[in-house]
Image (cartoon, rainbow over all chains, first blue to last red; front, side, top):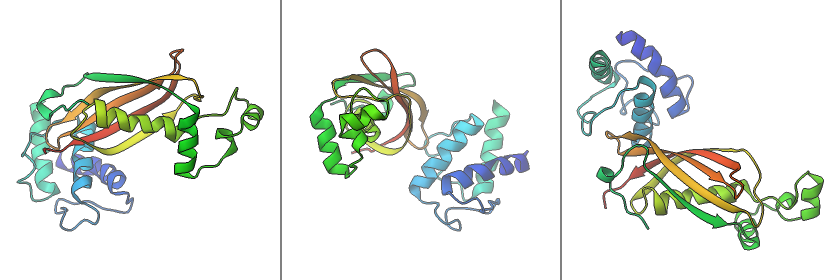
Length: 81
Length: 139
């Protein structure tokens, strides 16, 4: 399931960061992906919420270190649906 | 001016306002934008293109989406993040426009809302539609 989520995240990142060659991995984060600034972060989060039909709570994303940890959180939310 | 805070917003919440398009609106927008296309200035040219009068700039009527966000929904604490607009029919001087917006998505984690916005004329004809992404600051 985690791999499915990662695959589904690729076009979202491509669209938001306007880079079709970008390859997101579990280790990707704002520290190592060009263009992942604060407004892009908002765009990514809301696009993910709308695409996966899940909602993140205020502060819930602040502790996440990378895409892998976000996927883990997403798995919990999707399993709870 | 409205001044909705995050806790006061909910999905399906809506606001609207009415405004009449004037010659002064078109003239001011032409000067400000530098868009001197005759479709917006020369009625005979507009007739030749199949319109009954000079056509209002799409980006002029779209500027009312800025007013919708900054003054009405959410108002004072808004920060415009992005907007996608489609034009569906022309607007003309003398048209009475109704600009409306409804919250269709609230993201608690990012404090961003998405509006489904529309502009209709006095005949209830849809002139444009937009998806507007808006943040809220905490000042």
